[in-house]
Amino acid sequence: MDNKDKLTGLYLFDDFIEVASERIGEASEDTLFVLISADFSKFKYINRVYSYGAGDKLIKDLADALAGQKECVVACRPYSDHILGLFAFTKCDWDVEKERLKKLEEDFCKAHKKAYSKTSVHLNIGVYLVEDNNEPITSIIDKANIARRSVKGNYTVPYALYTQKLQTLKEAESRLIPIFEKALENDEILVYMQPKISVKKGGIRGAEALTRLIDDDGQIVPPDIFIPVLENSGKVLDLDWYVMKYVFKKIDEWLREGRTVVPISVNLSKLHFYHDSLVEDIMREFEKYDFSPDYVEFEVTESVFFEEAELIIDKIEKLRANGFKISVDDFGAGYSSLNLIGILPVDIIKLDKGFIKNSLNNKKGMDIIKGLIRILNEIEMDIVCEGIETKDEERIVYEFGCDSMQGFLYDRPIPIGNFEDKYMLRQVI
Image (cartoon, rainbow, N blue to C red; front, side, top):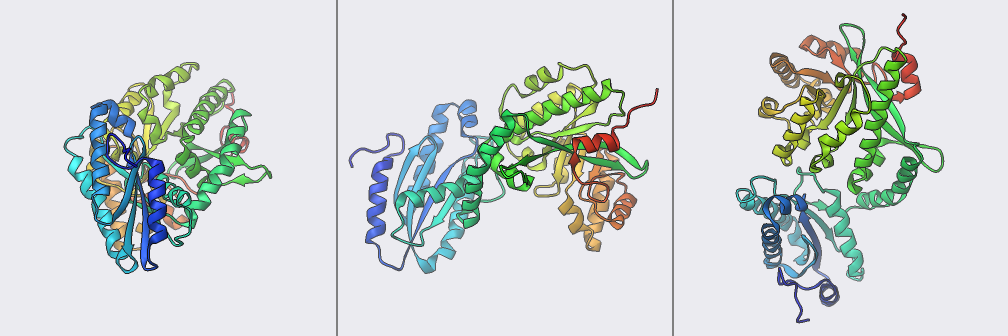
């Protein structure tokens, strides 16, 4: 086993398999083995902005950080920026050691923040606690990798611990990806619309385009099942493009039919913003039609702005320069900041339904919502309150200064045909 990875000095993958299997097999029963799988978020972007040499240095530093821990039994670099490490602990020490793992991730990112200021250095870390020392090392690695992939792009957690739920999601991916690809190929993805209502005017002011899949048994697959699968696989990009093209075509059709048309919002995943030609590609599709961009709104989630913010804001500014409205979805779900509101080049803030419901349960929460709506109104930002389900919620939020609302009180997401019949009335000439 004299051959080592030239960049990191770690074992090659096949040798890692052999050594790790031996060490686990020889260990006493009170030893807890932990397999850690780590890589970087958006590593290709780091290489492109800073050079491959700078990317190699990050990989070497990560290898040193993991393999340099006294509990590390053996480590390797299977490929690219991916590092695997097998660690041995006494079982009673793990609760303490997992806090050190969290600090390791925080310290590593903090140490490289200044040198890589044009991007966010962030580690995706998956952790698997080996319950049975007879489990094959390949299965152990697979489970750590499942955990690592589950947090790709999620900047809110320092690492993910493998659970049966993650395994279920992985199995769902194997089942749902073929269903999605078949629906995409056959133009069978269902587009639903959920209206946004003006309380003051008592009518529709816009709608959000949403999707549903039909499985092989003819049952509707809920979005909270298939969207995470598509996000983890990267295929959410294909879904977003499908919906955008569908909405462009449908708006054009409605206008030619003389219907009363309201702005329709479509979602843009954070993955879109790593494509240099995003704005040009959108404009190429949009220019096939002859209607105002006022009819189109692009929704991005709040957390997007905390990952390569400069890159993302640049593309959003270009979309706005072409006449499109931009809204921030799920505001208040995670990273909300008043400082953020002041710098975002957006037109609309959608207050997250969970944020709304939790805040309306107590006076302090209600004061926060009231103050936030007041600030947004003062800086002339449009506001939509999501998840409104009761007249009491509507009344309180409306009195606080929000007129536009979305939620089951008004309508659930409904098939496009029902939406046309209910809301897209033909104008009488």
